[in-house]
Image (cartoon, rainbow, N blue to C red):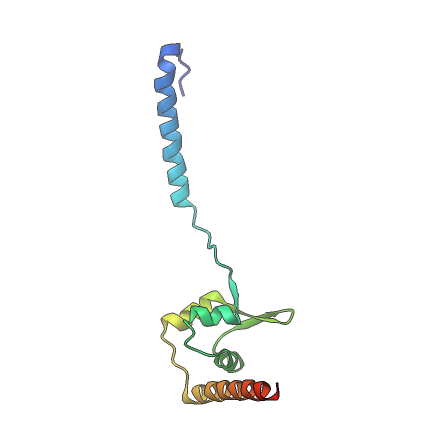
Length: 122
């Protein structure tokens, strides 16, 4: 870069050119740096159901876990699913097997039965 004398009258013009160059550099850097995902890498079972648009039951997610169809991890007592795995299930239009559907239906029926028994006892 050359060292040159700048007059006071030239300062506004030079400053605006400098600011324009800085803005161009900032835009190039912003485009070059990969965007960080704002969503967490792991989701709870409730969040997994929401991602799957509530098309599966909690019991179906547990069945998938036990059958090895979806990976999980535990933090304390909380069961977590990888968001990317859940999204793959959604994009792949995964349809559960007949056994999984039967298990999910049975689990829902048991839950409804338990709720009705609790209400009758009150």
